[in-house]
Image (tube, rainbow, N blue to C red):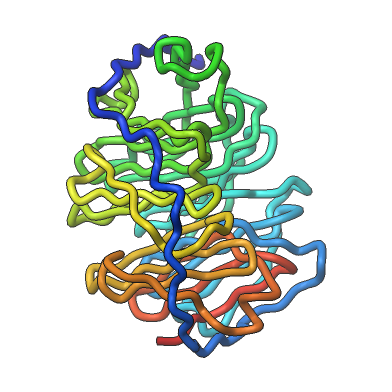
Length: 321
């Protein structure tokens, strides 16, 4: 039976109201861009995830691209759906993808894709899971679903949006989710919301609010992380998502996705723009390459060395150093 929970949301003190309007012009940097996969205009890819050298990208009409060699070569396949899959999580035990009308598919290591019921029919944009199988997917109009068995069974979560403080109690689109190894959950979305739960989604605190939407969040095991979104809006955390600070990435573009590594390299995908940092966000450069400035990318990830991004026309690109 699907369980519905009524959740409380305790407002944190010291919420960030928004970044300064001034945006410094970022330096331009030349980077080699290899187009690894190129599809047709209707083959948009939205999400990408890696577990070591094994990676999966998902997109329109149930398309799946898989790699076993760190993104050098890819094999196309299709899920048993014509709906778009919008987010994907890959770890040693499982691959989980979510998308339109609450659709979700799970694949065990070495197994086949299995469709699972999430209990909702809203679009799900993002999914994240930890090694213990605690999994959260976030979506449109406040959609949040949680699984405690690696995506096999789900139950919807319901927040009191009036208590969260959205305008008139509006249900915001929730675009990004992250589940840490310790079980803490971070979700980002409209109104610059950063929501955090430390008790498996029963109670939530509001860590950030603003006028600009946030479209993606990533938090590393060392506690450093980023959230990015509308009009160049970007935040950074150094304590696992407890507190967030505005950062100036040198862009006013729509920032779609973010990935960072322990060596301080950060990549942000955007609408016909890409921002990179080599010093964990202290300084930023804009990538100067026609494969970036004429195309938009969404999902971004890494097998440990190269960084790869997916987006418009089914493209998968490898971003050089």
